[in-house]
Image (cartoon, rainbow, N blue to C red; front, side, top):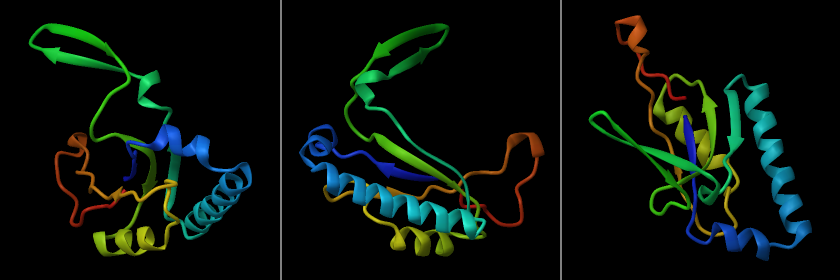
Length: 128
Protein backbone atom coordinates (compact mmCIF):
# COMPACT_ATOMS: atom_id res chain seq x y z
CA UNK A 1 0.00 0.00 0.00
CA UNK A 2 1.39 3.37 -1.00
CA UNK A 3 0.07 6.56 0.65
CA UNK A 4 0.27 10.05 -0.83
CA UNK A 5 0.40 12.22 2.27
CA UNK A 6 -1.81 15.31 2.44
CA UNK A 7 -0.11 18.65 2.90
CA UNK A 8 -1.43 21.35 5.22
CA UNK A 9 -1.97 23.71 2.28
CA UNK A 10 -3.64 21.11 0.02
CA UNK A 11 -7.08 22.75 -0.01
CA UNK A 12 -5.66 26.17 -0.87
CA UNK A 13 -3.05 24.87 -3.33
CA UNK A 14 -5.54 23.12 -5.59
CA UNK A 15 -7.48 26.36 -5.95
CA UNK A 16 -4.28 28.28 -6.81
CA UNK A 17 -3.21 25.89 -9.57
CA UNK A 18 -4.36 27.03 -13.00
CA UNK A 19 -6.75 24.68 -14.73
CA UNK A 20 -4.23 23.87 -17.47
CA UNK A 21 -1.48 23.06 -14.93
CA UNK A 22 -3.82 20.84 -12.93
CA UNK A 23 -5.02 19.02 -16.06
CA UNK A 24 -1.42 18.53 -17.21
CA UNK A 25 -0.40 17.12 -13.81
CA UNK A 26 -3.40 14.78 -13.80
CA UNK A 27 -2.54 13.57 -17.31
CA UNK A 28 1.03 12.81 -16.19
CA UNK A 29 -0.23 10.98 -13.09
CA UNK A 30 -2.70 8.99 -15.20
CA UNK A 31 0.14 7.99 -17.54
CA UNK A 32 2.19 6.79 -14.55
CA UNK A 33 -0.82 4.85 -13.24
CA UNK A 34 -1.25 3.21 -16.64
CA UNK A 35 2.44 2.22 -16.65
CA UNK A 36 1.93 0.59 -13.23
CA UNK A 37 -1.12 -1.31 -14.56
CA UNK A 38 0.73 -2.45 -17.69
CA UNK A 39 3.60 -3.73 -15.51
CA UNK A 40 1.10 -5.70 -13.38
CA UNK A 41 2.09 -3.73 -10.27
CA UNK A 42 -1.02 -1.69 -9.49
CA UNK A 43 -4.13 -3.41 -8.21
CA UNK A 44 -6.10 -0.27 -7.24
CA UNK A 45 -5.70 3.46 -6.58
CA UNK A 46 -7.78 6.43 -5.52
CA UNK A 47 -7.83 9.92 -4.12
CA UNK A 48 -9.51 10.73 -0.84
CA UNK A 49 -11.89 13.61 -0.25
CA UNK A 50 -10.79 16.34 2.21
CA UNK A 51 -10.87 15.43 5.89
CA UNK A 52 -13.49 18.13 6.50
CA UNK A 53 -15.94 15.78 4.75
CA UNK A 54 -14.96 12.75 6.84
CA UNK A 55 -15.77 11.20 10.18
CA UNK A 56 -13.79 9.27 12.77
CA UNK A 57 -15.07 6.84 15.34
CA UNK A 58 -13.18 6.90 18.65
CA UNK A 59 -13.16 3.64 20.64
CA UNK A 60 -12.85 3.59 24.43
CA UNK A 61 -13.93 0.29 25.95
CA UNK A 62 -17.60 -0.15 25.06
CA UNK A 63 -18.01 3.54 24.16
CA UNK A 64 -18.04 4.77 20.54
CA UNK A 65 -17.82 8.50 19.80
CA UNK A 66 -18.27 9.90 16.29
CA UNK A 67 -16.06 12.88 15.44
CA UNK A 68 -16.67 15.18 12.48
CA UNK A 69 -13.83 16.49 10.31
CA UNK A 70 -11.80 18.42 9.53
CA UNK A 71 -8.89 16.61 11.13
CA UNK A 72 -5.33 17.77 11.73
CA UNK A 73 -2.04 15.94 11.61
CA UNK A 74 -0.84 13.03 9.54
CA UNK A 75 -3.48 12.73 6.80
CA UNK A 76 -3.61 10.72 3.59
CA UNK A 77 -4.70 12.36 0.31
CA UNK A 78 -4.63 9.23 -1.85
CA UNK A 79 -3.39 5.67 -2.14
CA UNK A 80 -2.12 3.02 -4.52
CA UNK A 81 -2.42 -0.73 -3.89
CA UNK A 82 0.66 -2.31 -5.44
CA UNK A 83 2.02 -5.85 -5.33
CA UNK A 84 5.79 -6.10 -5.47
CA UNK A 85 8.30 -8.58 -4.06
CA UNK A 86 10.15 -6.09 -1.86
CA UNK A 87 10.69 -2.59 -0.52
CA UNK A 88 13.47 -1.80 -3.01
CA UNK A 89 11.09 -2.26 -5.95
CA UNK A 90 8.43 -0.11 -4.28
CA UNK A 91 10.95 2.68 -3.63
CA UNK A 92 12.15 2.52 -7.24
CA UNK A 93 8.59 2.96 -8.55
CA UNK A 94 7.80 5.80 -6.11
CA UNK A 95 10.97 7.66 -7.12
CA UNK A 96 9.65 7.68 -10.71
CA UNK A 97 6.29 9.12 -9.63
CA UNK A 98 5.24 12.71 -10.25
CA UNK A 99 4.88 14.70 -7.02
CA UNK A 100 1.20 14.04 -6.18
CA UNK A 101 0.81 17.46 -4.51
CA UNK A 102 1.25 20.96 -5.90
CA UNK A 103 3.69 21.69 -3.04
CA UNK A 104 6.58 19.64 -1.55
CA UNK A 105 5.14 16.37 -0.23
CA UNK A 106 5.85 12.81 0.88
CA UNK A 107 4.76 9.35 -0.19
CA UNK A 108 4.75 6.64 2.49
CA UNK A 109 5.39 2.94 1.76
CA UNK A 110 4.29 0.78 4.72
CA UNK A 111 4.46 -2.99 4.12
CA UNK A 112 1.25 -4.94 4.76
CA UNK A 113 1.33 -7.98 7.05
CA UNK A 114 0.01 -11.31 5.84
CA UNK A 115 -3.67 -11.77 6.52
CA UNK A 116 -4.50 -13.09 9.98
CA UNK A 117 -6.80 -15.60 8.32
CA UNK A 118 -3.81 -17.36 6.73
CA UNK A 119 -2.34 -18.04 10.22
CA UNK A 120 1.14 -17.77 8.77
CA UNK A 121 3.48 -15.13 7.45
CA UNK A 122 4.51 -15.43 3.85
CA UNK A 123 8.14 -16.13 3.00
CA UNK A 124 8.52 -12.53 1.90
CA UNK A 125 6.61 -9.34 2.62
CA UNK A 126 4.40 -8.00 -0.14
CA UNK A 127 4.70 -4.25 -0.60
CA UNK A 128 1.18 -3.23 -1.43
